[in-house]
Length: 57
Image (cartoon, rainbow, N blue to C red; front, top):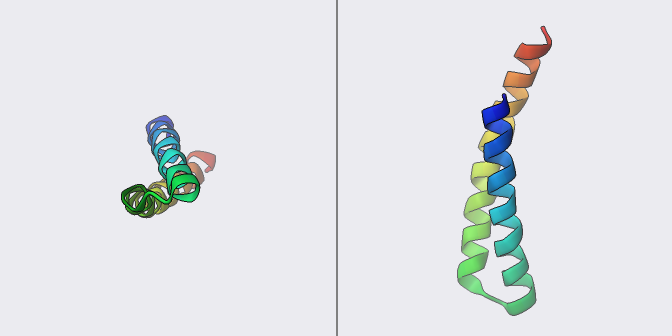
């Protein structure tokens, strides 16, 4: 579960940076990277939820 959390934290930082670039400067490539990161985050968050449920049993 710690590994998933670390991956989520790192990926969210990347997402945040790229989304900010898209919003503030209109950087289209950064927007694409932010969207890609959001899809990966979705998968990792689901994995974290599954691991968290297993740990609480």
